[in-house]
Image: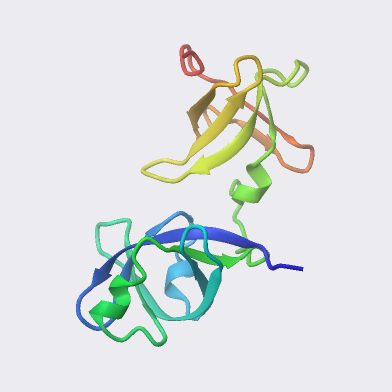
Length: 175
């Protein structure tokens, strides 16, 4: 059986002359970029290549991480990794704090405006940025919309039961 992976970031640039690369994270767990261990790199349309993360640090004041991989020792080698995705094994899930969720727990959840009413859509993705945004596909129109993943708008998440409650402000779901 092929191993399953989670995309946790993307190599966006070489950093300096000694083989380090800059990673734009797609994960809320900094240890994915700072703790040594096995990771994988994948260029679109190609297979995964196992790599060893030696060290990593977050750039002060930025969302970017700078990491060093075993065997990548100069800028030319680092530039060869640009545009590749950084992956971890799908079962490598960090412990969560109260109110935190893994993307795999959220994808496919039915979206309700009222616990008793029919679902209005389904969660298809989670986008990281300044704030996390749930991407929801609306059942009626098939249109996708982004909803801030904050307690005021998403007050209840029940992954075990397969749904979440949405209390959107007026106009948030309108096209």
